Length: 505
Image 1 (tube, helix red, strand yellow):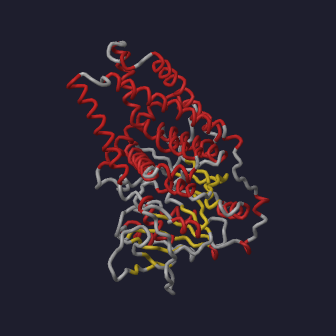
Image 2 (cartoon, rainbow, N blue to C red):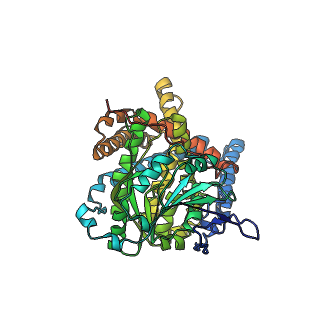
C-alpha cells in the first residue's frame, strides 16, 4: 500500500470544490486530473441565490403587509381566509405527492433494470477488463476498517486493474492508526485529505477523484458489503449502454433488519426505495437522486460534470439531478450492496437530519433559476424533481401541524378548526389521511415482500411512529440550515454498532 503525500500550492489554499490542495499517489508524482469547475449557481455554498433572496423577501413583505392592513382596517382577506388557503394548498400537495409515490411503486414492475447472470459475465474475461477506481471516504472508522479492507480485497476483479483509494482526513488519527496495523494489498492506496474547505464526504471524494486512474469509478462507504461481482456487472452495463448513460446505480439494502423496530422500518424504507421507487423513476426516465454509495460512474464524464458539490451534505442526490440537467442518464442495476442500518435512535436522527438538510439544499440550489431548470429537464422531469425532493421533504415539516389539528379535533370537536376546513377540503383531507396513510403502509409492505423481509410486514402497521421521527429530524435539519455555522456541517454516522445480526423472531 502506498501513502500519498500532500502537495500544497504555493499561492495558499483555495477552498473551491475544484482547486483544493490534493494528494498524489505513487513514487512518480503526476499532475492530478483536472475536474471541470462547478458553477457557483449549482453550488450549495450559499443558501439562496440573489433572485431567491429578493423573491422570498418580497413575498414575505407582501403577506405581512396584507395581514397588517386587515388587522388595522379590516379590509382585505381575513386571517381565516389565509388559513383556509394554506390548508387547501397543503392538502393538494399531499394528494399529488402520495399519488406520485404510488405511481412509482406500482409502475416499478415494468422497469427495464439492468440484470446480468453469471453466464453474461463470461463475455468479459479478465484480459478485457478496464481499470477501476474505488473511492472509500473514511472518518473515524478504525473499528470497521479491517472488515472493510477484507471485503474490498475479496471483490471479483483483477487486483492489478483495481485502484482502491482510502480517503482519510489529515487529523483522523483513529483511522490512520488502525490502518498502520494492517497490511493491505498493492491495490490499496491512502490519500490524505487536507483540512482546508468544508469537512465533508464530497470534498474528500473530489480529492480522490483527481487521483483516479480507472476508466470507471465507484464509491463504497466504510460499512458496505458489495456483491463480489458488482464491478464486473457495472463494466458490462456500461459496455452495453450508450455513452449518455454515465452512472449505474446498484441497489442498497440492510444486512441487519432484525436488530430492533427501528432497523425493520429502515430496511423496509430502503427496500421500497431501491427495489420499487427508483425503478419507477428509471422506467419513465426521470431524474434519479443517487444513493450515497455503490453508484458507478464513467470517470471522464464525472470530471466533466464538475464531480460532487463539497458544500452539499447529500451530494449524491444533487449529482443525480445535475446528470439529468446535462441530458445524461442514470440506470438502475440489479446488484446489491449491504449496509448497516442504524439501530440507535440518536445516530439515526443525526443521519436522517443530514439527509433531509441536503434535500433542502439540493432543491434550493436547482430552483435558483426555475425556467432554466425547466428547459434543461423538460416538463416531466421538472415536475418529478419537485415531487421527489421538494414537496416530499416539505411534508415532513407540516405533518406535525396536521397531527396537532387532528388531536385538537378529537379533544374539542370542530369548535376551533371548522373555519379552516371548507367541506371539499375536509373530505379530501380525510381521504388523504386515511387512505393515503394506508396506501403508504401498503407500499412499505410491498417493499418488504420484494426483498424477502416477510417478518417486517407487521411492523409497518406502526410506521406512522417512524414518520414522526422523520419530522423530528426534519426540524433539526431546517434549523441547522438556517445557521451558517451548521449549514454544511457533516454529522458523522457511527458504524459498527451491530456486530452480529439476530435471527428474526
